[in-house]
Amino acid sequence: MNIALIAHDRKKETMVNFTIAYKDILEKHNLYATGTTGLRIQEGSGLNINRFLSGPLGGDQQIGAKIAEEDMDLVIFLRDALEAQPHEPDIQALIRLCDVHYVPVATNLASAEIFIKAIERGDLDWRSVRKTDMFK
Ligand SMILES: O=C(CO)COP(=O)(O)O
Image (cartoon, rainbow, N blue to C red; front, side, top):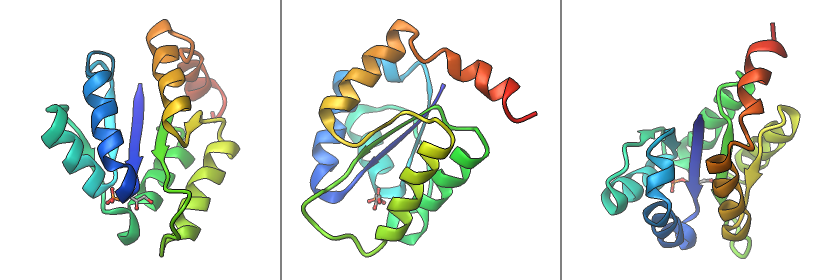
C-alpha cells in the first residue's frame, strides 16, 4: 500500500515518534513524504522514504498528483491547526483530492493511530480493488 506522511513543523516530532512506534507496520508499505518530514522520519526511524519536495515548494501538490492518479492509499497529514501556512491553498487542494478519490486521510495523531491499526487488520484492502476497477 502507498502511504503519504506529512507533518507541519510543530508536528514533526510527533510524526517521527509515530513512525518509530509503528515501524513494524509501516515498513511493510511504500512510504512517501514531503521533503523535510521525510528526512526527519528517515533519520529518526530508519524507515525508507520516497521524498518529494518540501511542502511550501510544491510537495503537497506532488502528493496530490499521486492521489489524483489513484496511486496513494492513505494520507497521514499531521497539520498545525494553530498556525497559518504560506501554502494553505496547496494543503486544501490535497485534502480535497482525498475526498474526491476516497482516500482515507488522518489529520491528527488520534485518527492516524486508528488508520494504522486498520491497515494492519486489512481494513483498507479494498483500495487495491478500487485502483484496478474504478478508473479503467
Ligand atoms: O508543509 C508541509 C505540508 O503542508 C510539509 O512540508 P515539509 O515536510 O517539507 O516540512
